[in-house]
Image (cartoon, rainbow, N blue to C red; front, side):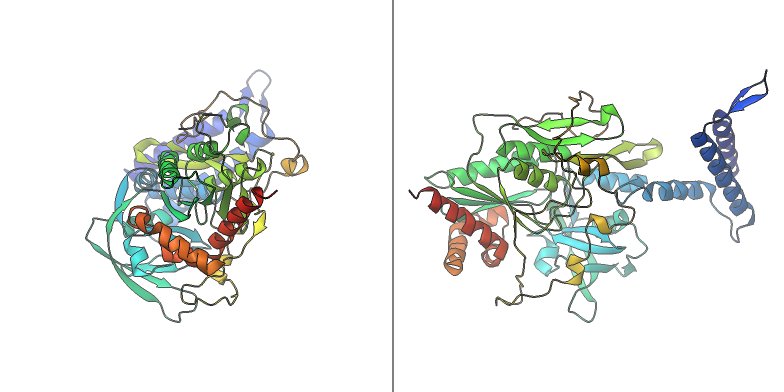
Length: 484
């Protein structure tokens, strides 16, 4: 089998090399472009290295595995968000955007090679056990995570409901690693939680952007709007630690709060990769004041929403600078169950801003100094784990679009692209509308009736300085708007 693979590979290398050179027999003239010549030389070098390893490496090698690893290395070195996925990883990626699964309820990412908890999902085994954002998972069932790819770690934590898994973490301020014996449960893919903070003021927490997020938000808003005899006076939209998700859902969510104008524009290398998402006016447009919370864990789709609402001056953005992932990935199924995820474009806010490696900067910066262990107001130095990483810190990250930085007054993309072939998970181009202590007590009292349904930790909201600040601003705005 390996011999056949080697022969087939060398045959196609020969075909490719021949295709790069055009020979005219009459004049014995050969023409090769500079770019093709470089590719020709690189393929020859690749073939030489492969042959050398096959013939002389200390142990017998699997040629098929060598070639797959070569492809993986080629794609992984493009940027942090591109990857060549074996069949198991491709299945895991598809599970992440739909349905439900058995697991422990942790959102994780690789930060400087370490498997890091972005956030535990409230109400899940991980959350109940006390796993926190910023924890670094060093072992899963005794196996080190240092040699595992992200999808492999995720797969090891998932499993049948009722089965146990041991997660070993290290945490800032704790000298020794800690073992958590977690019993897996069904993790629903609900991405929206909501509650009433005070009479007339709602709270909407969006944890990620999945294929039903916009519909979940509309349902939550209807409940919030009908929970009081009076219309909502204001809404807090919490996008903190939201790692993103589907571009189509980010556009639909923005459209709920906007009645006209560009939401986001996409620009790639080619004309067919340029696209504009626009808002629409409908009878149920929401007009009440809006405060949006972001932080360094707000990435991608959540930055699209925050950027659109900020540029249209529809919402006040509070918190800290967002992650800065301003690129769009497409997923292409390959033969034998493999998949290819790669970056195909950058996205731009309505005012033409590329936030790649820069992030969305809040209108009002509000640090998060709350400690679950302490109720005092002492300001603490942020943990190195929590402040160490943004898009600009990732290896091989895409640089901001230099031309766009020079021409930021040029809003959006000129092209009215009708082509929508390069992102598999997008639905359509233009999505339709498918007194702190006292106020803390108000939050607790007014949300009791919804706590079990929405899985919102009311005690945590009551102590959250960013939510308190946003609520103060909304209440203050309502008071001032009624003054003569």
